[in-house]
Amino acid sequence: PQESDSLFEIIAKTENLDNFMRYFWIRIVLLAGIYGICLGWYAWNLQIAASAIKMPLLLLGTMVICFPPLFAFNMLLGSKLNLKQSLSLLLVANYVLTFILASLAPVLLFFAISAPDKHFVSLLNFMFCSLAGIFSLIFLWKGMRYLTLRAGKQYNPRIIRIWSLFYIFVGTQLSCLLRPFFGDKEAAFVLFREIQGNNY
Image 1 (spheres, rainbow, N blue to C red):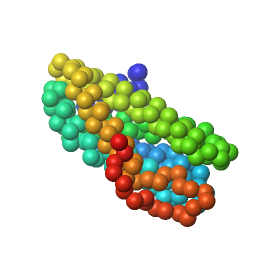
Image 2: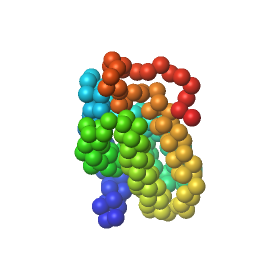
Image 3: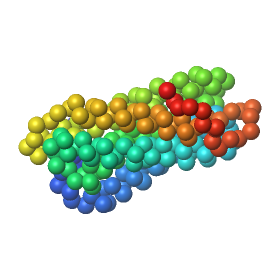
Image 4: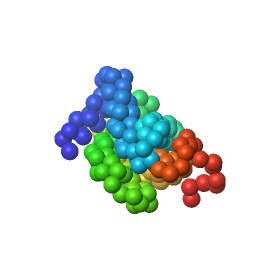
């Protein structure tokens, strides 16, 4: 808790935010890439490299798409965060997500190599991403609360939770557009599958 508060305080003071954001951008790409490698390992072909690129694209793409409403909702919250502060908070929350995913990557890799059932590996991936996403959103909510109260404003958690639903919907739909992440062991490598409807 003290470490997270110190991060929130850096964001609140707006000191050196350019370096702060660069630091987390780089680590999000690296950690998401590590998890992507483990996803693609199931097919044991070019899918390894493709998933290593797709996973950072998924997370950063979702963040870019959902950032404008976050900033708008942030204004409604009354926390008075500027663009850099809002982006910094979202970056740190995504770092939390990728850090958890990277810590779970060896487990995913083990089952990707040893388990013949793709559905089981896919379910395991869903569980890992859901777990990491929950921790990431909790961190984001906590950060919004801290920064809003620090600004002397009343915190309304409903607004940021509504935004969280948008974030989840966009993330799952974008993952559908970027698939496959696992690939198929017995089929030729395919970079993208044909889009058929939506993820829901």
